[in-house]
Each structure stands twice: as C-alpha cells, then as structure tokens.
Amino acid sequence: MNPGARLIVLGKQGAGKGTQAIRLSRHYVVPHISTGDTFRAAVRSGSEFGQKAKVYLDAGDLVPDEIVVGVVSERLTHSDTMHRGFILDGFPRTVHQAESLEKILEPRPLDLVLNLEIDTEHVLSRLASRRVCSDCGANYSVTDNPPRVKGICDVCGGEVVQRDDDTESAIRRRLELYEQETAPLIAWYSDRGLLVTMDALGTPDEVTERLVSEVDRRKASAAG
Image (cartoon, rainbow, N blue to C red; front, side):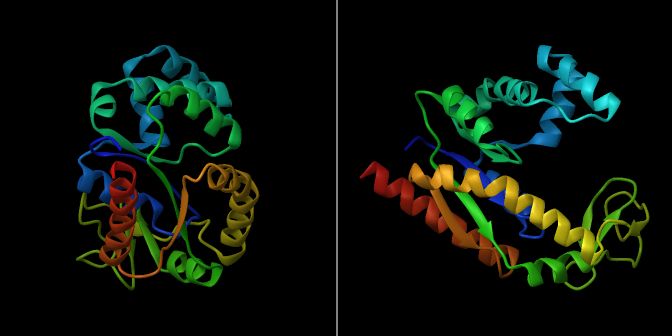
C-alpha cells in the first residue's frame, strides 16, 4: 500500500465516526476530508463545483450527487491527498457515489473502509448525554467530556445546550434512515474485500488503537 493511508470511515450517529476520522488523520498525517468542511471550502474558493453547490445550499435544498462528487473530486486533486492519502468522513453515502469515487481514485484504490458498529441502545445513551455549543458547534458529553465550566464552551465561551433533535424518537428515526441508506454501501464495499466492521464501544483511545492496528495489519499484509 501507499505511505499514509487512503481510508473511508463509516458509522451511524453516536458511533464516534467524526472523532475517529480526525484521530486517524492525525495518526497517519493525512487530511481529514468531511463533506461539510469540503462544501464550505469549495464555496469560499469559488471553484466550479463550489459555485454550483452554493446555489443549492443557499436555497436549503439537497445537493445533487453529481455536484457532491464534483466537490469531493476537486478536493482529492490537491497535493496533500495525492502524496500522502486522506480520511473520507461523510462520503460516499450511496453506491452511486462509491462507484464515482472508485473511478476518481484510479489507479490508486482505497486501502480500507472502516465501519464503526454500535448498537442502538448505546447510541441513545451517548446522544442523550450530548451537548453542543450554540455558537461554534463544539461537542461535549455530560458524562464523559463535560465543559470545564458547566454550560460554557471551552473553545469560544458560548452557551452549551442540548440539541432539539436529540430526542429518542428523532434519534431512532435517523438511525433507521442511516441503515436504509448505508446497508447497500456496506454490502458494496464488502463484496470488494475493502470493508472491515469494528466495535465502536470503548474510550476514544481504545477505539483508535483498535482501528490503527487493523489498518496497519492490512497495510503490512498487502505490502508483504
């Protein structure tokens, strides 16, 4: 395999996908590419697909697949991803996007697709304790990672609140939608021998160690 890593991190809400994607990007010294950040950067840069995406984002509409793929494709042409690799977080979401990504990456394919698995009851427990800064969006947990001063964000001093959609019924609905949307994608990557499903339970350090061990094992096996 190539130096660094070329990975996708999948996982339902509450599995710690974003946290682990960032940790893996730091470990392998590669960019963490999240869909939201990539959209915002493309819009700011005024790139071709950034301008197209802005029309939909400003209208509050769903961005079409071809524009999503275009924005990610633009980002993957930057030198940092070409030379070292990347961690994709939030893309692809559908088989069609995965097929497009496969073509974009030719002839250097993905190293691995990590699917973080966690049961619904643990998700409900985690999200029920989640709190978010109303100003900068920093995430906290009242049980595992509370702000240093109750109700005040460590980062910007904003108010730390519970999200309106962190109710049990709303969370269960989001999980159902995720399963419907992602099941075909997981099967698609599994058929190609790229998918590994990992337990998302444990401390962030424990989960990161688990993921790094699996990625390194696969990289060593491919290199040998």
